[in-house]
Length: 320
Image (cartoon, rainbow, N blue to C red; front, side, top):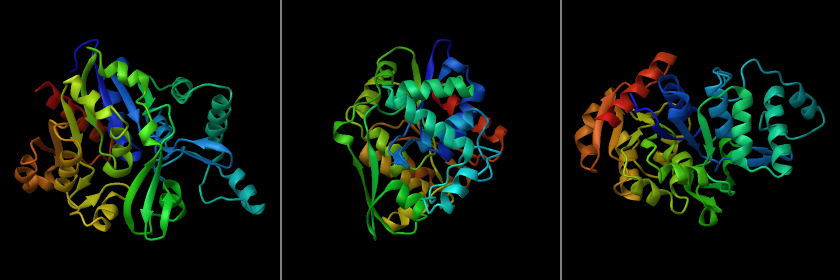
């Protein structure tokens, strides 16, 4: 499906992006997939460096993710959180006992001088993940939500406040000084890159932090390979996460078309194909006016087969 020696680069946030990344990992050889992950959600909690999107992706690719909760590890226990609660500690960000080990290990490795890319690669190897997973940057970028309750660090908005405050905008602290991951820069400049697939992640807090790293969009455009984005909005709803709520509060129509227009306005010429669900076929003509080719299929990924089928569909667009 992809020529031997070529690599697909996927851009991903957490749960929604990880689903398509898993489908791609299933249908591509290990060396044929690299995933660049949002780290704007990263934060320090209880003295630990936590990378929620990286962990969600790694756990998903390793087949260890908790599909009931949608985050963390399957088969978790919560004794550490229970003990912490009894001591009056902060437990609003739930860390299962096995998940806690990941954060302890990462924090110690970073403190010993390893970079986030190396730590992520080591963790992937230990979890049995064969695809390559890259943090978007080695530099710190932190998403802040401008809200009706003032500026909130992303995890305080997302987890502590359960997305309740109305969204007024976003800021990515440190983005001006952040540099693209050097390994991604090398891939984009090489002849190994076959295409870029933007997974159905939240465009505002998962994809925008990646694309707004200085030089990232220019490097993607200069790579001159097909770029395909899959809409995270289906029939006016977000399959997972607060994207639809955010769009409504930002006075945007909650539609796949609005997502396509967001990308077209902020990153002109970046997208070649935009994939929408068959329930949104009536939007295809208007989306096409943004300058992208619209492809229609089933984008809801409930089963492992659904993920593989959508992955194959996006790869066929690349080939065409």
